[in-house]
Image (cartoon, rainbow, N blue to C red; front, side, top):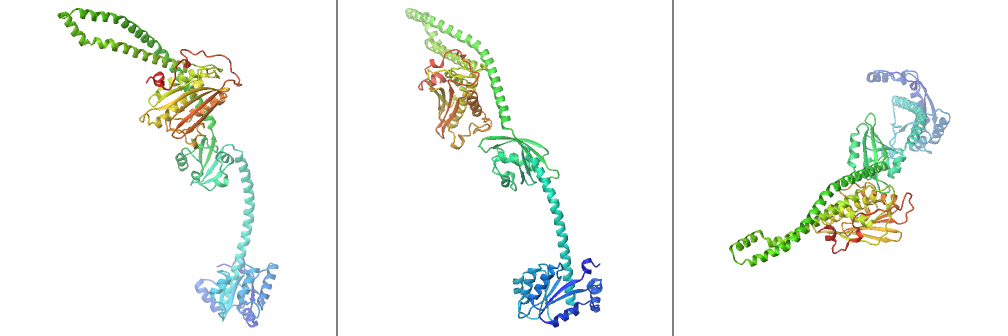
Length: 609
């Protein structure tokens, strides 16, 4: 094995022993006098080379101490001079001062890297006691007296080289640590610059590793989710306290990490409203995770849905207007013909009575008998009673169809660009007509309308849209409570009243009600308690916007679980919103105030049974 620089340097050895003869022995054994050639031969036989300590001319610099305290002072002085000892041979017994174990403890306190050989011929300490005092340490070697000079030379050589190599490693480690510190400073500066750059990004920026564990969480994510970086980093994204609407979608995205996957995810925001994120998943090259970039697009999607809803309502209005126009003319024919048939049959009734008198006067002649038999088969007497009743029922049906057509025409009216005085009672009656198919099988209507109700300024078309949404919600609540009418019909009460500077419209049902924890959220966009396909979460949110923002009014809910819900819309009579005019809406047809909407005859007057 080639000799290293550490091998060629002079070894510094400290002998701590109270016996001067022992010091002389160490000096002889460690002097470079050629060594024991027989040992060299044995070593060469096993190792295939010569020991550098015995053949390369390197020697030892030996210092003597005759008590433990003197040895500790010598070690401290060597440290101060920058030339620490490599190896210390310490005797176990050195009365009256420190013993060997105590001396070793003090030496290591001064020079933690010192290699120590503890020399003893007695059993003052057991091995367990030495370990308990000095611990398991690879810097300690126990050498039993008497010992051969080869053992001492080999121990000194090996331990000295070990100390020098350890010191070299430590120096190199210090140099590396300094270089690392320099590079770390540079990296920290680069990292700070990167953090400033990323912090300027207004979008949510979330980094995850290949296991879905968060490793980056920017300020926008804190603002959106209310979770601090120290709470998020190191946790799995799916396990963070975020109430995702579809957590499986997020899990599928993180597990698949398709290149630049774009999705929309809904979650419950800090204010318990439903928010929408436009999310892009960007895998990191090498499969070490992904970066999630997201933007809150709630307002954008809300506006798009409101526009879509308005477009749908406009399309429905146009369709309803067309249907109403097509139905109106044939219904007019039917009505006129039914009136004609009723009048004609009424004129035939006296003739039939005279016909009966003539038969009675005819006696029992064969002709009279045959005629009576024929009349019996035809059941003229029964027809004289049922035909007027059938004609009356047909006229009622035509009137009801005409009423529905009239409601469709009013509902489909395009309205005005400015608010006008609106007959709220009439709007409520039209709403009931339009939504009849939703409630007729599950509820009966009860009316409580103020006939002297003043007319507020309103956008009639938008008000009708709000009332339709509220009416449909009430019908669904009653349907759920009655199991779609199988347990009997519920009740929906429509009420109007003058409330100071407001006109109040109340739609009250005896349906399932709304749980307390959900009452503050029902007006939030995208929130719905209905099953998929039955609700979009936009009805009440749109109603709130139309009443409060567009009309300057109020809308609120009162509900008890199992007892029902009352929704109140308050429209101001004196509005300070710009753009209002005093143009009146001339209601067509019979006013709702002229109809008797009492609870007892609500079914016959409004629902038709």
